[in-house]
Length: 381
Image (cartoon, rainbow, N blue to C red; front, side):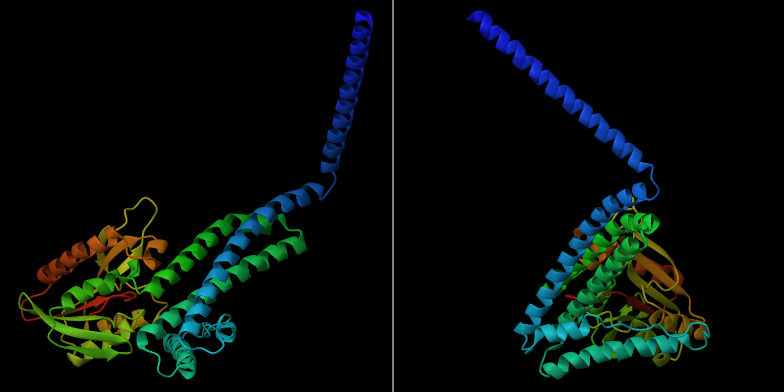
């Protein structure tokens, strides 16, 4: 009996060894076949494109998710504010664009750019008030910002999708490699925009409000405030025997105003008798730099496409007025989301920089213009 069991065990063991040996042969043959196949023209490239496209598609899905969430928030806001058909309004605004003016002939390009930008802003505003004529300025600015965010996310999504489809159609591994490298960056941008929308809807000050925050600290001491240009106000204070005219976007709406035109009007109102222009703004930091670090320099500190910035430069040249710049450094995400503690504390440092510049570079009896550049959401005057 024992001999029979041992014989059966030996037979079973030999059977298992034979099956394992057969499996090994099949595996090796399959491996060699794959290796040989990889040497055929185009197969290796198609395999790489397949794996790369999966990675890019995952990033695209993330961007699409941010877009859907942002669109949902916008439609919800519109519905709450009395818009009968929020989806139709978003559909109309989501692909809105502004075509750059002709740059081959640069003569008067700034005025043409200014016209296009202002006209676009006015048109969107008119579209909102046409649906709800009694809408308050704060809510209107929130809707404007929300539609801008949806528009930006939609553009990011469509551009990434466009190049992904093109790379697949052309079987281009170079396009796919480039797309894989930049896709994570645009995911970060999309995430920042999505976060920013929620902050704007809550009326919370953002990092880019550093300039208006500094200006508001000065304007608290102003007896009178007056409008100097569209969505922009100013006020005068006395500091160490100098007249300081402070300019900022009108808060607490989410707007950057028209500071360039505002400064131009203030200086013309003073008859050009201004000793110094000081601009204060948030600036993108380099990796490794600390959030909230302050620096000073020369020129107009303003992230403007051109019209507002050049307005200050032109009036400064006209009257020979030096322009100083004070910046507070932060990342892009920190600039468009809720104001961090480091940025808020940096406002005091920026004020000290401004005061030092006034004392060191102007004389008693002179007039100085201080401009707080940035989005004034949640920051009054």
